[in-house]
Image: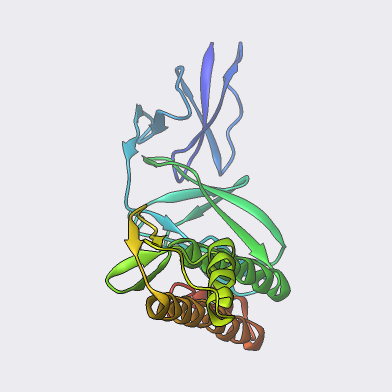
Amino acid sequence: MRYTKFHKVGGAIHSIVDRDTPPVETDAVGFIVGDAVQADHWVNDCEIVSREEWTEAQSVSVVGLGDDPVEIVTGLPPDAWCAVGIEQIQSQDGSLWFVTDRVGKYQVQLSGRYRCAPMRFEVVELATAQALQNDAVNAQKAAVIAGGATWGNRRWDSGAESVSSLVTRLTGVVAGIPLPAGFFWTDADNNDVPIDEAGLSGLARALTDFSFAAHSNARALKDQITAATSVHEVMALDIAAGWPS
């Protein structure tokens, strides 16, 4: 005889077992005759039924190490059950709370009646969270600079290679070397734009100001990261704010 092993309270299916005699139930685990698929079914009132899709759940990505319960997932049904590793936890008012007393990576899956894509979060110490956010600031700075700076109603390459080339040309102008006839500079949208010495100087100033503004904002964000005293404070920082455009 084939039996479906399930969690008595939440209805989550654990496994399928073949037995000649009925398995022994416990307070937490029950058995029902039948062949169910863990991903597709749950047990409701001693009946195997289809699970329901749920798309509103949202998980944090990083939380701090501690002994107090932390809100890990929001947007859950009020009667939802979640599996965190082998532990079954019921939602409270649409949220999943979890004691983050061990560093590591965790996966959350809805179990029982509802299902959705797995959600993952990591429990870290303060220094790890600061390192993660510093890396994120560096990536944001690189993306901002790669996106180019606006000057004269046009977008211009502001990467190190472009700025270096522009400074080299401007240095020649300052040294008394005139620009070639019909000189132009190519903008970030691949348009050849005629430009004179004054324009070249203005563009160089704009790109320098842009680069410094990006660097200055990155430094300010990193100072806030360093000053933070909790993982929550670190991860709550808006690293997308304050960048030049």
